[in-house]
Length: 350
Image (cartoon, rainbow, N blue to C red; front, side):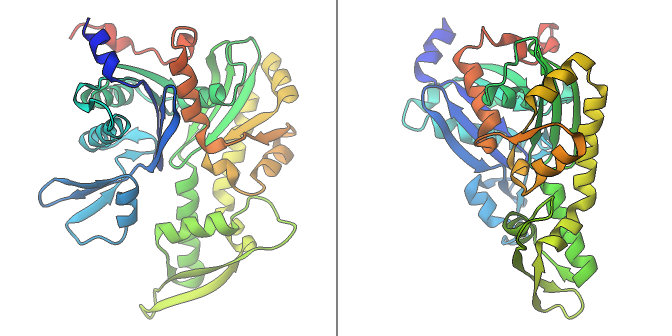
């Protein structure tokens, strides 16, 4: 009875709870929120100063007592209370034109593959405490596969690689389940760190995280480009302490990221090696699908194809694949129930 009452005031939502960005899909409306997973907290008072885009603008620009943090590390809840507040903010934002006080939505949340029961419980509890009526969890590579319309419920093998901010999920999917998967802590953030380390070691230049990301987006590549790209790297000279800028090209940045990209490619090869032969035959025919922000790195698809001898394609609108998948699941939870993560602890009496 209460569920029926709350459902009149609530909009069912799908959430891609990413390390770098959180995307929210509202049933019947599509993707309505795409904001950074950043929360600014006043450490003196414990109050939350800003969430999302506003908090991201504060990174590296705040006084000592205000700290802009990411409550999710490698896709996993690292600060439960701050994650809960962030989810409350997004749920309220979706319902701001309705009776937000009565909003108790059904929520589908994407989580990294291979997380522990405790980590699943943390996400589910945070969503329930933020006001969710029902919470369904789905592994991000599965949600991405649904989002790009792969035949996940058929007896056909599909290999999807979801390269996010904190983690990379590699999964072989067949018959509504994940057959083989690997979860790496090498993704967009790690590539930014590689660029920061490279600038420090090669040029004695201290870069900020946002500057490193801007350079990666501007000229970063995994494979040699037909035409070289250049960008200005601005930071603080570690010797003089004064501002300094130097020109770098795509070959420099490729060299900076080489080790991490090699680890990523080797993990994909290892996943293929562990896959049953019948499914490998399907993957050879259907190819590897790349999704997530990291898949947009220039030449990455070409490098993976060269190393694995399997066709590779980057999905259309790859940044939103996971959240679109949560939206498709929301539209028909019963038909897609087998792709959801089972939460056995729910059945255990408290």
